[in-house]
Image: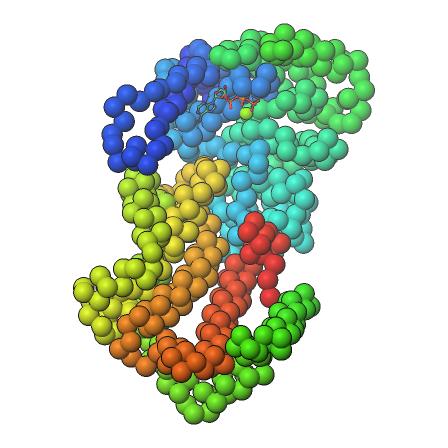
Length: 277
Length: 254
Ligand SMILES: Nc1ncnc2c1ncn2[C@@H]1O[C@H](COP(=O)(O)OP(=O)(O)OP(=O)(O)O)[C@@H](O)[C@H]1O
Ligand SMILES: [Mg+2]
């Protein structure tokens, strides 16, 4: 691991959310807010991380510790108050083509068919219809949704909807995949299936760099090369745990090994110590 | 469909039964009303009244849509504009219909213009408010997804906000038609400068011809229901994804 230029660098990043309590009264709409009440909340405190090309990194930590916040700063959806996030060596000033993002609640467009959802990225770039459909079909096949091209999202199950989400991200051909609890909205059984599916899909796609947030310790060990444990709010990096399994080992059988159990216990202690009662 | 026919049958049945018992009170039964309506039609008076009425109805209604829909969407997209205009629309919305007629006559006279202005004023707030609510409620995730794929402001508007708005536009049109019809009838009843449907109503009730009054009212109701049904058809073909999603019951129609 002597890559001189890491893919993603989170460099002493602090994020403070400021919520302004607006006076939502009838008159308040016309009058200027003279004494606005601003509530400050430090979500993330001095976080530093380096993610190398090809890494698969999981971020875990108690609820509200700023996992989503870190991921969204990597994608340029929000910005740090101090410190800097760099992707491919340049500061993140907004969403960029290198990054794809998977949303916990799928974020599919209900008025678009599966294929038009999947082809959304190329469509925005002005790729002609037949070209982008071909690209979309390839990824729809890959995620196992062949035959559902013309279905609307509401006609699909939750697991299938997130498959569409994954295919949509892949069709934009990102170098970096950012996933915020990609399977958090699914039931336990579907979630397990999707975890193995993601391993299969990413293996087929070649090694992109991935960062994902999860609450599921098994998921973190099963998928990631490195697990970042964050402390309770304000979130800091508490520990980074290396997961020594090779990509080829990652399957059903791994769940039964004592190594897996040990890792899970280790992560559990790490997160549990932080979980507010 | 069955349920609709059944409820229709019940309403007509009750009406018929009431008209039997209450003939002294002067409630014409279904047969008399349909008969009166038939006479109005064959004499040509209904159609000539309708053509007069539809003119200002279509003009005022169309104007309300052409201005109300974009206004509402603009308010939703530019929050400060929305916050500023919303109370004005709400005030207009609760303004009592018939009480302001004299003002309208003062400003717009008693011709075509006053009816058009009246229908417009009473339809536009509802249309704009519904469209405003729609644009305002566009889920942030859907906008963020587009940003992740590097959408421009323009693309976010045309590919996210506007498609999300479509069902709201149709809802606003449905409500708008109802309001426009009410405004139209009120205007014609109170400003009798033309021989439209309102005039027919006024004329018949002056003559205590209740069968004709009810006939005209029935006709207006059918007209409105027909317009709404046509719009629902258009909605299901324009927005097929709405089938199965029935947040406001709009999905399960026809
Ligand atoms: N837009 C926002 N405005 C104000 N506060 C926010 C905002 N987003 C998040 N927060 C606050 O910042 C903190 C961190 O939020 P974040 O969503 O990053 O946590 P998380 O680790 O992803 O939690 P979870 O595991 O529940 O998803 C929380 O306390 C949250 O209330
Ligand atoms: Mg989160």
